[in-house]
Image 1 (cartoon, protein in one colour):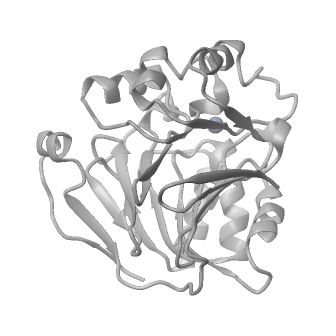
Image 2 (cartoon, protein in one colour):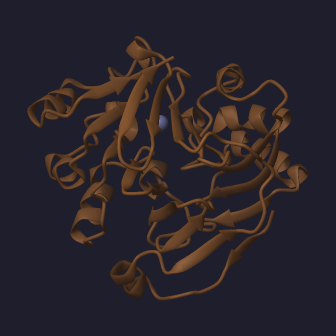
Image 3 (cartoon, helix red, strand yellow):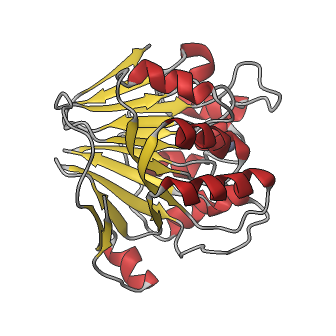
Length: 290
Ligand SMILES: [Zn+2]
């Protein structure tokens, strides 16, 4: 599999046009698929891991959770003999998003890896770098304006970061993180990683189109995120929170939950519901507890 970036435009143009840079997958490993778009918010404890299977069977994993639990969860949603993942995305290199991806690279053949490229000097990042070097996957940094074409009317739009973060240092990695909008037919899902209100405000003020049918709540429901303005602009039909049972951070916070209740947005949380599956057919949706 090869990535192809066909066009490069300025940040201002990207903000205005959104999605002009096209990143295409030229080939894929997977076959099959059932014509539906499946998103699994995997129950990996306190961390994020979101597995996506497109209508014709392409598989994408966004973050890997804090430990090896991801391998068990992938075993529950992937077929027994399937040992290939088309694309792995790491929204930011904090342990609760990255650590599980190390086991994923050890267990699975990963064809492409995308991240921000931000500087990271932890021992976890050093290990990750080594594993990536041995994987032979295509590597690409994601940045606003790119579109990852998945074939069959599925598109992944990159809404954040606004600039290539290669080698850039962040005191708070959360705010350098990747925000993605997944589109299938007329339906959309916004994946926010751990962005905090500074980035939420930046997206709102820049006029980036964040309006989406479904929302993965940022930062495990922390009060650092999910401002009233942001939730209002996204105006989702349903929200999903990836969070560990009895976690020491008190996530999700009362502030965020009551905001969702005020807006009458139904929400699902992995600490209570376990792994949650969202199934889209391009028009209607189903949410299943697994
Ligand atoms: Zn996190």
